[in-house]
Length: 184
Image (tube, one colour):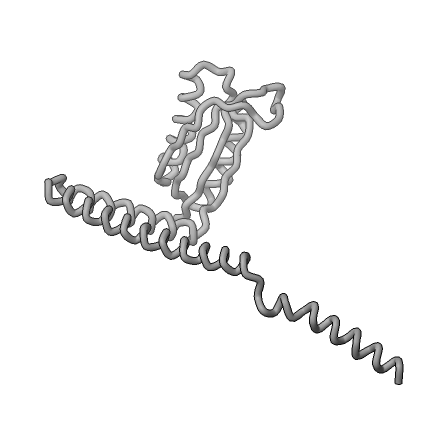
């Protein structure tokens, strides 16, 4: 079985019960054919980017599910036959996206376990204040080092460097050397 994601737009001019029946119809279609619904995300009523069948609004729904490849042809055909559905888009979820989703779920689960293991005691608050004081000390050191750099730059701007003073003298020497060559 492969994992798919379908986003479809139902006519928003229908009553809420009719919209919900249409969504449930397609969910039951997946389950009746041996597939498994992973997630149903109802985005709600939104303005369409362009008119479809003289309609400006649609009710967006995104369904993630697993099914056999043969099922998708039936699935798409059912969407075409239902007049309440304005547009559909079904994609095969790439394996890389599946792996990334599993990693995110594992991280989220571990964070929740860590959060539930930590009880807010007074000791935790003291430890956090020490961490904050260390962070503020690091920032103070960084600020002082930046001030030292700024002071050095100011001193360099005030006192012209040796190289800048040498430039006009070299130019004068070159012109005098050129004048002597012309005389010879």
